[in-house]
Length: 411
Ligand code: CAA
Image (cartoon, rainbow, N blue to C red):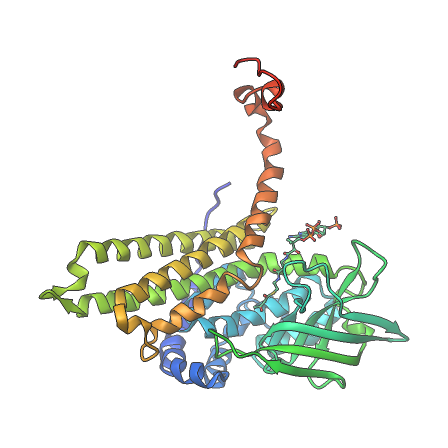
């Protein structure tokens, strides 16, 4: 059902602050950190000083409690300047959501105020070498030993790994159970046996580290078991992704808008056949399509985000739709932006090539777009139960169960 999307003054002000930081600390440094494949600590400090890490943390724990819509708006503005920095910011929300949504009061008091203040960065450790889309098929184990869990195994694709201080790690605590196999446990940087091993060499989003995290008999107190009850991990992971996917979708909207901005400036400036290329209808069509898709994605993201803030039931489908649609748009818009730039677009001398490289991962992480479509379809099929009143308008059972060796009634 449609619902009101309300932009509070606070939400608008936070987005404005994010835009200023993006133009001052992110865009000018974007090329440098992309080339060096290093984290932009200066920009992260500016984000922390401006209080932007408080956006997604509830008020009781030092945050603004500004909600998922505000998180999306801030992420969009940062990603507009540099998609990699957009995820460097938003992944802190992804890593915090298991604690926010599933943690005990003590756990929230312990970690969230530090995350809100930007004193501690966070990472989300779900994927493994052999468990990506099949998030339930994990193999990292956490075995009880007195007051502790002992964690063993390896995690793959940990965004923010090395930079982060707090890791939400999804582990198998009950291999015999089907539905209560997994638990989320917080591992803090510096815990003996915990190591960041392989720092990946990536095609895009190079300013944020993506690593393997290794756990060699890592002992953590049972107090770090998120929610205090084993077996809740898969649910916590799914609830987290439902809340985080509009954030990655917002990153995609920012990336698409950023690529469109550059394509527009270039199309007005670049002259061929004695006129700016923006005066040619085929270029105009590309620019118009890019703008329409970006705007459609933006409002789908705002709708999905504000549905969560409004407390609507079953926001899983909306979150998946926003993620899938917006990230496909980002890839298409970035591709067309390169086309507008012609040969210059293909060169690493200009940032537009980076928008193209950065866009690809959006369709892959936080659940591939194939998984998003599966989630959307599963929900649609479930919802179709409420459409029973339309059954008089479809072929009846005999007609739809035609197997080829029978003549259908109306044939
Ligand atoms: N909310 C709450 N519970 C949920 C849920 C949701 N959205 N979706 C499923 N569940 C529950 C189900 O109700 C079920 O509970 P019971 O056992 O009690 O009945 C249980 O979880 C299992 O559900 P499914 O049978 O639907 O599970 P599945 O094995 O078929 O998998 C899936 C579902 C949607 C494919 C899931 O595995 C998935 O989302 N995979 C993608 C993983 C992913 O997104 N990884 C990204 C990693 S993060 C990342 O990339 C971050 C980064 O670096 C930036």
